[in-house]
Amino acid sequence: MSTAVEWTPEAKARLKEIPFFVRPAARKKIERFAQEAGTPQITVEVYEQAKQRFG
Image (tube, rainbow, N blue to C red):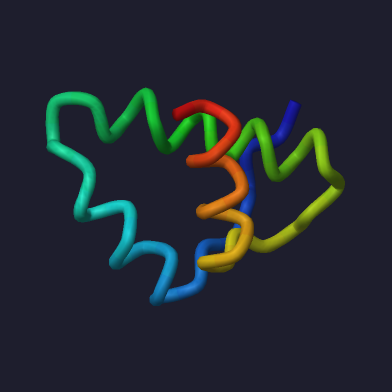
């Protein structure tokens, strides 16, 4: 499975707000969420949807 999901600069900035020690796991979850939703790009909206889903 390809993990080539594009992140917008705004979504990347939001990702940096997550503590560095959980960031890699959070990034994988958000990317998986986007792939399952059939979304090729992670925007702030997709990021927020994933955040609400995973808490």
